[in-house]
Image 1 (cartoon, one colour):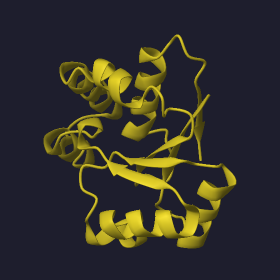
Image 2 (cartoon, one colour):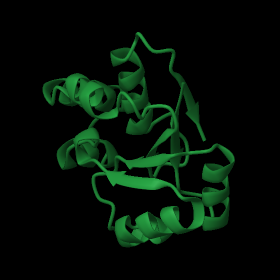
Image 3 (cartoon, rainbow, N blue to C red):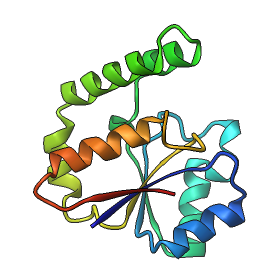
Length: 149
């Protein structure tokens, strides 16, 4: 079972959609706090939903429960906290939101072929990696491989 992640920054629309098609993605789970920013380009929420369905036949869902709070994100971007502090605060947040049970209930039958979307070009310092690892750890009885596209 594969759980994918992707960031759209530093990718053209052509590259982005070709990567998704090549990897047989079935659903994009957009875990950005804000999916309507001017900086989102071709990945603005409603536009992205249309493009995914039309170009690739991929479903789209925006779920901010899997996003950091504005405060955590702002503190990290403004260098008030380190990546390690961000990671700890984000993990605490998703534990407080009881996402393990929500993920089990909502996504257990869809994990294979889901792709977590955020803006960062790489997953290393992005919350999508943390969410993917959280899902893998909470669905530990499944053999989930995380693939960062």
